[in-house]
Length: 218
Image (cartoon, rainbow, N blue to C red; front, top):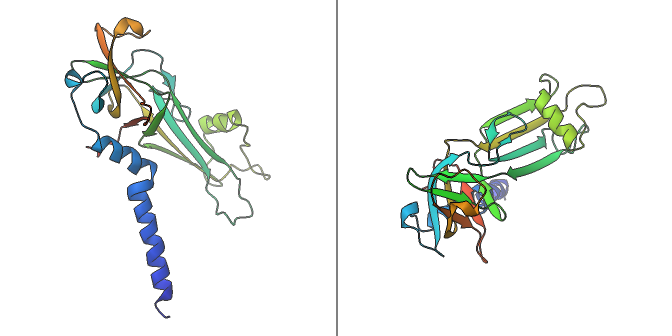
């Protein structure tokens, strides 16, 4: 019985590791893309489910990321209460937002338009923001909280104890995608694409489109 706490802790840690490796968003997206046949855009045929890669280009609508104000075509923002779940002053803020505009990539020869109507994305969170007693909330985070109907200070007027992360798809960033492919005339889309034909990646009946900018996904 002396080893019981160690066994319990070991089982919990093993569960957390397995969840991260196989069931987390990062794992599901990365594993799906890695297991999908990889092809150059020039090799893709109509109706195939493939994985492709290329650099993000701004060919249509561009957004401004809410926290970093970077220009992008996709962003994922997570804002969470940094207090313990048992803390009396817990804020109960839990925002998880993803938005996409016109996602287009270029592999040096051909362009691909990525549908985001049904998408599962893992975007690397490369910007982190903290607020609390010693860290004032940035104007951008304040604006974002207000937009989502959240308060920006506690009852004493101090900044809320929050942790915020943001990941974006910027121009020139390498993007990896898996989905069902089809070739179209570029004139079928209201985008600035200087080629007559463009590859379109969309969800199939069975599977969403998977995208990531994780440099470790092969």
